[in-house]
Image 1 (cartoon, rainbow, N blue to C red):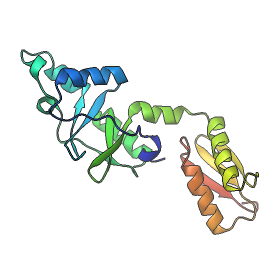
Image 2 (image 1 turned 60 degrees about the vertical axis):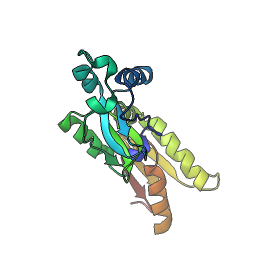
Image 3 (image 1 turned 180 degrees about the horizontal axis):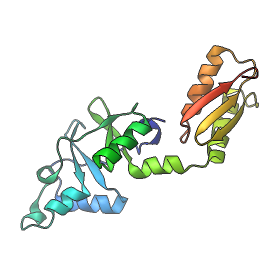
Image 4 (image 1 turned 45 degrees about the vertical axis):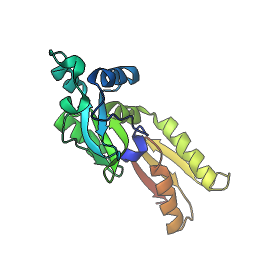
Length: 189
């Protein structure tokens, strides 16, 4: 599973000239812990976190502060191809709650700890049903392959499937939230 599969998109962002109080209201109203800060070209230039607000939001000048004055910079971002396991490890090791996801330098989404936990919490039955639905659609509406999911690993029964079909089945299964690994069984393997 990759960042693009679980990210919230489009990302809600702020510009550096936004008042801190307005950004705080945005965080609270959406239940976010951080907001990417972007320039006029939507390029990531920083991140505004709850900690930034707590650290800087209660001084004498707090009412007139701007996001650009209190944001964390540089912001660490991940590419849409980043594996969920890499995101999770970085969040734990670096004590980060939110990673902006970028395409080049443009913010295209965010992944939070909650997004990762939500993906992990999906039941195998739910994930299997979703994979089966996608494979049935690919198979022209008929059940050509079977799917079992256990602990996030999708096992696809694909008797007589050629290599190209197996590759497509793997790609389709990996596109489903909650699929961590895919195996294709053919001819009794």
